[in-house]
Length: 155
Ligand code: RB5
Image 1: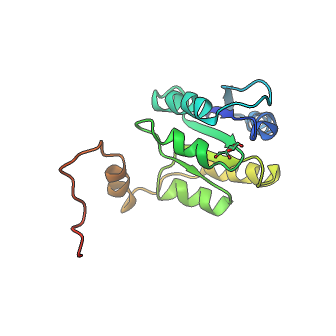
Image 2: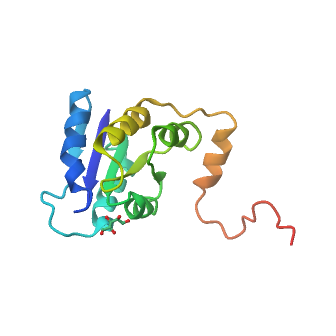
């Protein structure tokens, strides 16, 4: 699989080891930076990975910041991206099966490398389950439509 990877300074410590891990598993990894652990802004790197995945130039995106939160939030702003922060292999499985997540936000500060490796194993090997989840994902990806009311609120 072709995978785009990037981090900020807080995730940098795990970026190269995770890229190497993915290469050892036979994946093609495109490293979009940064090149050092100098302080930087996670949105800049989230955007690079998200756009590459949205354009179909990578099948999945891997983002690492301190928590995995901000970098995933930013990636989600790009149309076509379903990014989520993940801290356990179980959540990685459900993010794929139920939500068809195509970008993952990992924590370089609070989750050990070995756990992030397991998370990536699951994230990259689990298929979207489709079925009842498919229309939900379609609704999630709907362009902003002011006329869409969803389920009426019973206030
Ligand atoms: C950087 O200090 C930190 O805020 C960032 O890596 C990330 O955790 C944000 O969500």
